[in-house]
Amino acid sequence: MNAPRGLVGRPGRAAGLALDRRLLPRGGHLLVAVSGGADSTALLLALHALAPALKLRLSVAHLNHGLRGAAAAADANFVKRLAQSLSIPLISGRARVAERARRRRLSLEMAARESRYDFLVRAARGVGANAIATAHTLDDQAETVLLRLLRGAGTTGLGGIAPDVELQGVRVIRPLLRVSRAEIERFLQARGQPWCEDASNNDTAMLRNRVRHELLPLLERRFNPRIRETLARTAAIARDEDALLDAAAAADDPRDLAALTRLPVALRRRALRRWLIEAGTPPEAVGFDCLAGIERLTATSRGTRRLALAAGWSVERRYGRLVLHRPALAPVRLKIERKIESSAGVWPLRLPGLTRLAALGLIVTVRRAAGVARERPARPGVWPVRATLSETVRAGRTLALRAWRPGDRMRPFGLRGTRKLQDIFTDAKTPLIERAGLPVMVCGEEIVWVPGYRIAAAWAADAAARNLQVVIRPMRRNRSHYDDGAGL
Image 1 (spheres, one colour):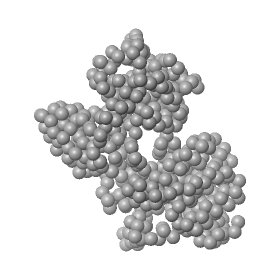
Image 2 (spheres, rainbow, N blue to C red):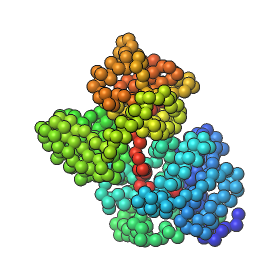
Image 3 (spheres, rainbow, N blue to C red):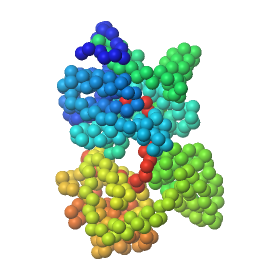
Image 4 (cartoon, rainbow, N blue to C red):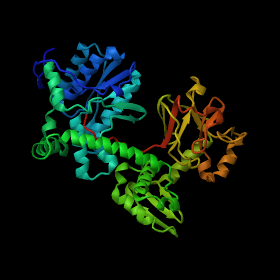
């Protein structure tokens, strides 16, 4: 293959590349995000070499961001020829990143990241891939940790780029996260494989590039020659500790002030942050100052006070409880509830995958995994909620959401006999305005789960088996949140 303009690399001795094989879906279909740069080119070559042994089926995805004119077109042509040379199918796309940045008031970097991941998720669903592989490296991890230190971050931020995450119901893996950029270039040079260089990566007007070209080399030269490995190790430790704190905070309801004030400060802030973000508050609005303000609000449980957050959100202390107010939500909720109440609609769910239900204002994510979610239900009508259902009981049948109907009954797990849903809502003190259009999960005519309450007894899951892990959360309107990693 002839090297197009802008390609670099030279022949040399063969070398290996240590991918994290534990992340790879053995026997599955992997969509590989390839920009044409060194990292993603090396990832594709390494996965292609491993594919026969792991029985992996590969597809390539490439997005033209519409920002770099002829250079971007050359990158797209390079990726096309590379995929053809490996006999791997290619899904290509084009985005209007600058337009998205203006419309959403985002930086070009954030708009590009949103466009990229939206494209990758669509492409993965289109080809039926089990996961998306991106080429984040050890260097990307080190840069991300430093960026977050500079901006200010807790253990969640210092965890950096996660090796395995779920995005819009699709798994995203980073098999190169323990491999340095220097190792990648040696790998490509040993094979005589060229790659594309993006000139914007050298623009030190961008903070990440200043960290990459100025700060990291300085730290490496003057303080610690293995600073990249050190920062990556710090990120791994932070992620483990973050998961432990998350698990501890998940057991607590931050809306109950008596229980909240008894928690250690770290768990108190964690429980508050988790509650706010999962309820739909923009993550960038839930910083240290926001949490400190809520803590001051909770200093006493007497009377009522309200704290304004960003983007029209607010938290109210109503005697012994915290109440979150969404911006201009009440009229929208009433309109939606009336629409659902007069509708006989049934909304089938993607299994596994993500289903957006605009009529309900909800997003439902279903994945297959062992274990049982042990989360204390709040009450019907309070989002987000989680449940674990038996995949064996489902046996290929369709699951769906619909509005509950007068006369609906279920046999709740852990209780004897059946109960009317109307009685369940009354006992849970679900307000009438919230009760009107509450959705329930059904399989045919059988009620499987009342979200926020309990699953049906017949659908109880075995912790040792592969089950359906279901999460229902409210839609975040005109807002996306991605981890602050590098590009493809």
